[in-house]
Length: 307
Image (cartoon, rainbow, N blue to C red; front, top):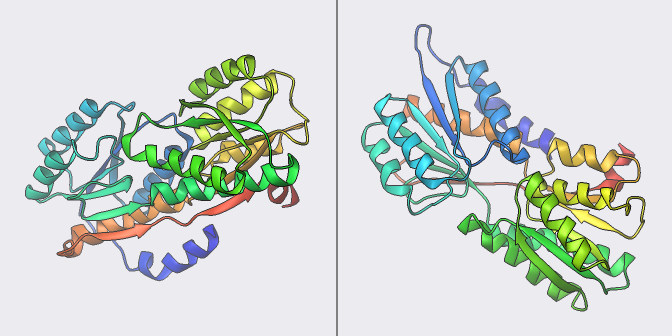
């Protein structure tokens, strides 16, 4: 999937250049640097900008909407040529981003989107959750006879992502109706995921399935499971989403119970964002916002180990 996306972009990318002596500056306000998904988006964004000769400034909001708002104000004052935003509060960020556009700055959103963004690299949150839950239900039905206790490590602290968790819950309820959800808590960092699952395993020792709505929380949950001595159990399942390098590495560990993630091609998305921002700076944005939807491809442990 990633190779295919890269090939599709070759002709477009080769057409983008920065003129000699032209100094462009692109900024990126990120939800949280600790999230492995955003680590990969940042890498793609920065590496593509470096190839294009564009200066970058990438800043961490630490999931604080007020900090993100201040970032945008500072980028406007500093007269950046383009701003990429992975928004926390999609409603609260719209006015300041519109002010950036009014000042002649290109504004692009990544992950969640806000109304005025001129390009929106995004996904349908509920569909993404549904895709995760469908894969989890397969495991429950094939490995656990359709019955188990399970826990969700959610991202309910980010309002648009609540629907992702809903998609996970509702798809499992549909395809593995005898599975019982015993915990849904927010923990979208490794530390948060570990803390949640340590407590869940104490309260619900029969839990056999843990799904995170991203890899970051899921990796913490996985560490808690492995520390509890449940590693090597062929029926135990931990899953995440985003197919980050950290998740793939966890799948390869001895006795690993990290079974599945869903690839959204974050590195390629970061590169595409940089290309689109340059296109808009050079040629002007379209009259109507453009949408670019992430691919969704399940990545199973068995496939990783077979590579």
